[in-house]
Length: 96
Image (tube, rainbow, N blue to C red; front, side, top):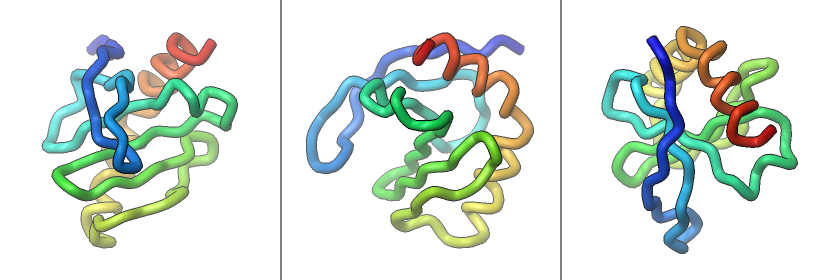
């Protein structure tokens, strides 16, 4: 399965921003990067409704969480683990 980065509008830190979204990951979550974050180590933002979190990709770990339950964070972590190679490839494509 090929993962592609597309752009969508997101409300981030109370400001609307254009962010690249990673497509083809199943489930109710939006997985995306923020262009201004490319100076940080590889990581991924995840949104669902009014909840958001950030995971470092190498090594995989939770950076911050706003609103997700522990159970849901474990599910998100498993999804990221399953698709981590493709996510890192998308990060490299986007951030260089």
